Image (tube, rainbow, N blue to C red):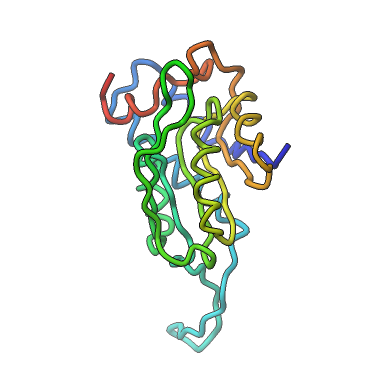
Length: 209
């Protein structure tokens, strides 16, 4: 089994609890997800490489370190992954953005691709795939396998919630992609929903049913 990193900061736990409540409005749900995304980005980018730059402070010349944002590519899985995108872009505004469109067939839960657009020269870039829910793992695995065809420098997967079935499903492929999540919930139900979960993340982000 590959690496799973649970980001258990009190602020994230607090905001996630508010998101789980069924009475939370679309506006508040979206705002909370945006805030959690910024907090999670701190840990997800912890080991990203930096490069030295020469700068002038008001007092003297010195050398500092910066992340090369243009080497980072954020890839939301459409459509719910876009709910995480804006928060992470506020932390890494120089990041490139790719998109992959996948949907789960209701009966088989198999992922079907309908859109794929990535920046050039991925072999020089670090990829962060984002989707609020890692449920069966089929969609995430399909997205990562597709991106791997372009041979990026590294891949990480970030989700708000997952469950044991989702982790196993994603790592059914070679388990070399670390998972970052705010919580590991109890189980997956017969309809492919995480329990206790927070419902359908896409519907709650966009106010649809």
